Amino acid sequence: MEIVLAAGKAPALDTGDTAWLLAATALVLLMTPGLALFYGGMVRTKSVLNMLMMSFVSIALVTVVWLTAGYSLAFGGDSAGGLIGGLKHVGMADIGPQSLHGSVPTLLFATFQLTFAIITAALVSGAVADRAKFGAWLVFVPVWALLVYVPVAHWVWGPGGWILAHLGALDFAGGLPVEITSGASGLALCLVLGPRLGFKKDAMRPHNLPMVMLGAGLLWFGWFGFNAGSALGASGLAAAAFLNTLAAGCTGLLGWLFVEQKRDGHPTTLGAASGAVAGLVAITPSCGTVSLLGALVVGLAAGAVCSYAVSWKFKLNYDDSLDVVGVHLVGGVIGTLLIGLFAVEDMTGGAKGLLYGGGPALLGKQLLAVVVVAGYAFAVTYALGKVIDKLMGFRASEEQEHTGLDLTVHAETAYDHGVLGHGAPVAHSAAQKVTSQA
Image (cartoon, rainbow, N blue to C red; front, side, top):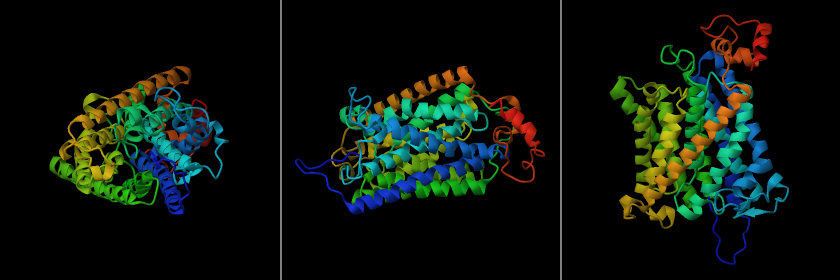
């Protein structure tokens, strides 16, 4: 996402680049409602609305944080040796409609980046589905965005960020700040909250697979803006990233289904949706650095490996409710590391992967970036989760969790006739009584 201009050449507005980035920004914003449907279909009927709300409220919370301080701290120069940006854009009052970031308006670039921050925060919610206090989530999201997402975004994309400027690791569209950060943070938060009631004992199947498939389709659609939009212009690089995104999503889907058929004897709709998302996650950092062949391999590897990774929670006893760790952390690591093998000079403008004659140096840089980002996100999120839990409690009560967060927290149900297999609705007065505990 770095813009490089020829020496002495002033930036000029390009209407084609601007038009494409406007569309891409809208596409990425659509991904969060798509994620809400994807997650909403995966939970049980009694917490559907709560799951949708956790994504939608993230749009509002992160937007306020980003416009007040987040954008400045991520992209406002560098003020601490590559660790964090400056404060010159606080409130964004100094950025007018004529200000440019490369060939596009700075306000548009800031909005495009905002949509990345929004969905990253929303992704974390999948790890603690069915059991997090909504009030605690409202506190967690803005603080987490400032303490975790913003610094990592600066490291990877900000001017002077240490991963970009000093280490030289590559990440085209967000494997580090989006996928690995959300996955590591999700792992930390689910450890803070502990497992759901009935984890490994009760059936916790998705209640609405058509909703899951619709959400996955919207995510896939929006991902073209996510990845191809990261070229920041209507260019050949954007076209290559677009095609790589499509290819990896397809091989991710096929890889997951192949494993399911071989292991379980049944290719499932949930597996198809999850496999496509796994492929899209993995190609996110590498879509602008690998060839089409590399993209096919990246997606296939992610689909196959992530299909096994989602079962680790049962062996290691951490309740990652909707597989944020198994898909986003593992898929993000795969995609980021495989840059070190499959990067091609035609895409990167210089750097080459190990299999293309570049030697092991790039792979080592990618590995170091993965370890540092994952470790930082996990440590800070775990500490933040513990502080919130101590101050106000992060976990819903057993009564709320058993009855369902929709009724007890939001005084609503997703379906008119009871909660589809969970008994008749409790009177609103009773629900409101429990809501006060949230």
